[in-house]
Image (cartoon, rainbow, N blue to C red; front, side, top):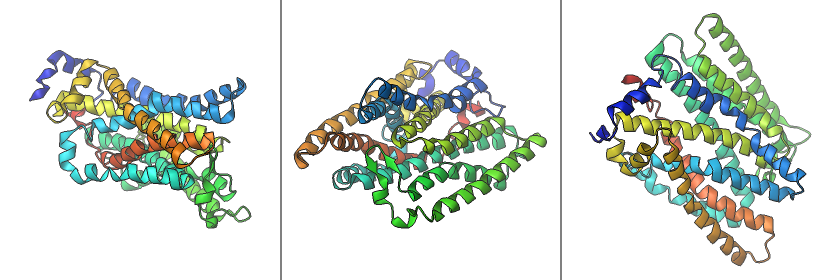
Length: 383
């Protein structure tokens, strides 16, 4: 097999870092640094935005500066790293040929919406992005569940426990967001997303949907607290998973409180991207050590071999952002022709969101399939 390109010494060094019999996905240090305690990055984008305003920068300029920095530094590489496991992997393309071919429809939809109804596009983007972030959280939760039940202990997990974990994760982001929607104050930058949301959900005097969502969240929260206390008292609490879920719920619940939602969600996006890159590169390394990466994705395997800590994979993912930069330039020029006299902020938003969302939505689309592979880390635990 082509994995002979990896020396026996390299395999042994990599294996020595994997806690095969414990609850951690790789080891305590790695899980805490990349998955859980990396939560410290959440306030950084908003802090940068506030610093920019204190320095006298225009509000929109400061916001767009933060958006661009996050997109280039981590959001963009995380988005492009998906293609290391899909578009650049012959095995994936053979399994899902229709998925790959149908992906071309997404840029067409994005470009059309960017010019015809930017608010509708951003509204759809917000909800798909929210579901994608929460889907990743449930995926990581299920990776912990899968390792626990298959390699550590089988008695601790049951359908009710799983359902409660999913419920608290999937409801945590929405109570405050629904309050802002009900009050007609749900805005992303200069774009009022309320324009694309039915008036049924925007009733300041009767915020029924906010009340409904809040009640569902409250039930999920009480169930999660009760379940965690029970598991702790019985010595079956999965501490790595519990820490991750608890921090996620706290951050997701309070993030929509911030007045500038555009930059506020960039904080959540930064944490999400940081986790995604770590998990993606970990899976790639495992496939290279124990699987068929050299046969199915030789270009990816070449970058994976270059450094032990995946710096080359990050650089390769960042390089793929050239495609977004080209689209940004083309759409920026085109927007000035199609909509002469357009204001500067809208002009930038059309080009920026087209360049980003054309690839980002494909990334979401592909991840709905990747996030069903709960055995992706098994190679590291079997050897």
